[in-house]
Image (tube, rainbow, N blue to C red):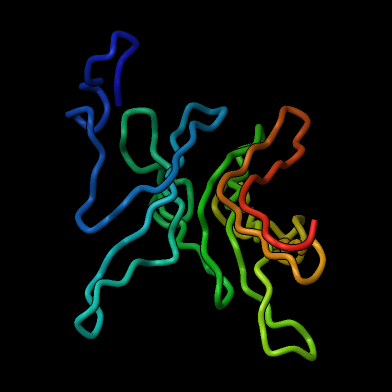
Length: 171
């Protein structure tokens, strides 16, 4: 964390840095409340190979300590469907966390799958938001045989969601 002058913010985690062993932060956002929400992945050794987790949302207070009112002790491990991944995070003005990624779905009557946008939203407390899609989850396809991969997500002041990424398929 840097101060307005570009120097380390010593009030953030006591050193200006936030880190955890075997954890990689892949995206972050400051919530309207001033809390910092991270999309983090843990890395662990399984059967002789390094494996990265699907991801978790971590919410920190502005001083770099875990916000224990979110998820379990400030952490909300993302429960992803099979064959999916998360790439980006956003927070709306109500404090709900939105995670954007990609899911592969098997196409009916075909031997191939299609990549679709995947959105997951939590309540301000870190639980799946039952009022969003089906159980807090939305998937979006853009016609067959196109594939989309979500890389970023934004929420405007009116609450509209914009997902950016890569598209391949017929134009």
